[in-house]
Length: 530
Image (cartoon, rainbow, N blue to C red; front, side):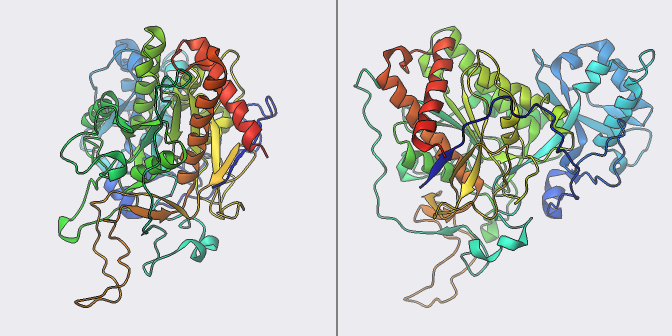
């Protein structure tokens, strides 16, 4: 499989470039919006307090993200409530935590108002308009930090296939009679050897955090069923603190399905037909790519995505913040066992705002915190066949922070013949390319769907397109290019640490981590630069 790193032209493009333009209305299947209580912002009809026409995005219309410090400030929150009260909207006040973490806050209709008329975008415009009056309105800086709760999509897009927003690449990536790109395959291969830690140059395994749909059973990971957690010291571990934060978010918002643990399984399913969602197995597939390409690394799995490919912005932010806290503990108290070296994100969203607004968002802030800590962050460019920026991958546009690690590495997908995949997003903001089409990897062994093979009798059958008991599948998407690039970075961390004792993986001091991250990226440029 191929990997291509593009050396960033530092300072070539400042934040908030001039190529921002609203796009046509985003297309999201109605059943997904209904399941998650979502809505698509229409750029033609949407009002905007700033007068700037927004881009289309998907969001939760009864939720706003409000930072914890604002929720603790009675004066600031009171001013916000006063504006929304005038619109017939009540703000459900969750118990705030510490710091400045954005929390999902539920909006409710008051005085008999139709709940369907509650719209967080309209509420946000009222707040922004009110903040223009310095005498009677809420504080402008407070309002600036209140945002929509975006729906974040898997980078195999909304139906598990890369072509639902671009029919031009329809047939070339369909493999089964039902039109799916994801089908079971068989391979005759043992899991790649993990290597030993008895070499003083290889003192700790680099950890790749995968924020995705969770994990399922597979013999490569010594996870044989869902009755027990992953084995201690194994290839895959989980971050319980992040899962707890996600459960807390779900309790404050109420209506939509919630993620209760790290197991990859349909949240809403009809057991009678053994439903297989569009993104079932997504996280397990990604873990298998890393096992193949960087077997000496470890995977830290965090479930932020529902098996239908939808994640909530607050859950992604919360998981990233928990990783940043874990890295802070590792660096502050010299705890190498807590270190996270790489983050792989095969998800994202199209934002409604001009680029310079996105670059100061809650998501951008926590990603920036990670890169300042020296964590290498890789994100999928998306599968919409567009140059419109897909976040967080497009944060690769941000200039590097002095003294920090490398900025975001955004990853597009290649075909097996090294041409760019027809579904992959592209643009100057894409800084890495890796094979993402026709990829074979691990799949949960207990997944079997309702389809039946075309030919079947008592002795023979055709290929069952959704029976994955064999444990492997072939799939396409920038979702799968991203972990391949993350694996290359993890391998580079091992290599530079082995060559330079001053960059040992056992040393998790902030300065060493940042230097090691830059050295690893430079190694990737040397090996894979185009």
